[in-house]
Length: 461
Image (cartoon, rainbow, N blue to C red; front, side, top):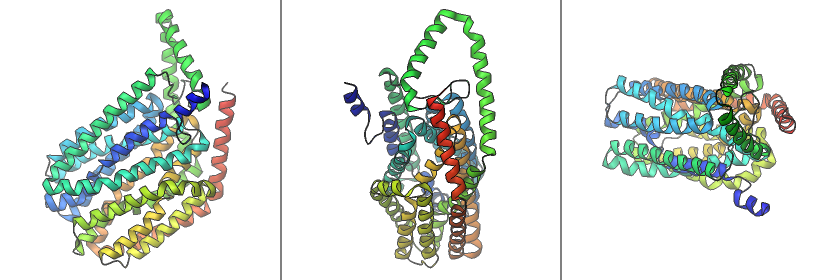
């Protein structure tokens, strides 16, 4: 019976605690298309100057910085599920406000709020996966997460292109509706998980120790039930321990923040990936403007996004076996090297075919960057600080969302798109070299973190 239950619980070696969230991510990204079309919307529909558009779009990124920073810490304190649900509901409401605004200043303010809420779940999702998936299967889990995102991303532009033919406003309404629908599904999923008696690992137990190891799930469930019964019997006697636990949790938040800020291998890795992010987000900020300047239209850009998402959707899962043999650092370095080639081709592209070739090349590089980078952060993070580490890492992601349109818009307006792609190629070369030079220190830090997690799981006292 136990073996049969295990078979029912696991698909590809991953439990329902993972797959429920995975399905929500897939649906969510099928409707996540506003940010990809935001620059074109502001220029074409609202007739805002290209230089101003960069500043307006950047406000989304600055809001995302706040969301990632607090989303990670708060998920360590209050739990992953709460941050995911609050973020999606808040983002849907903010998006509806954005859809009715036309002035750059008010649009920027609304996009700031939208960015904060939309990014709140990101570190919580990454930490949740690390909580419920054993370390040896986390690369697979993050690759499959990226696969879901990319499959949704391949479908999203096609849907959005049809929606904007009717009305740009419809694009905002549909994405908001998808967010609300996914939130309802997640609430039902988490409730069903509790109803079935499946324990969701907690970020910490009040003492700063992780309780998220798969081997301790059943024990955590029993302990929670016992604590509930004791609290009912003791009444006010539990008030003092509860206050102590809250104080310990606040201290743990500060301790985790200090640990992340002094973790040199993690900081070096995050800064290098920040350079990659700055280039990556030119695909949704600089690229559509550069293509428009060359006489290409929205449909041409939409097809490129679909090519990008479609290739990732088709190739991500087959690439898992290759990635597992290569190791995280080697996959990252190889992925960045291929991305360099793609952007080098983009420097000479002056037609849709040229841009399509460049996109296909840097899409191949993207296969080995995002999921492996997230896996690397999870491996570097102590078990009881996963949310904080993922939050800090995502802060740089969000900062690049803010800075990429500013830098790209300024460079295109002053020097043209070709100079932008040359600069992107140079940055990618520097990132690739940096990842290679820091590989040994990073691998040692990941091995030490995994040993510490294994020791804590074996001897929690």
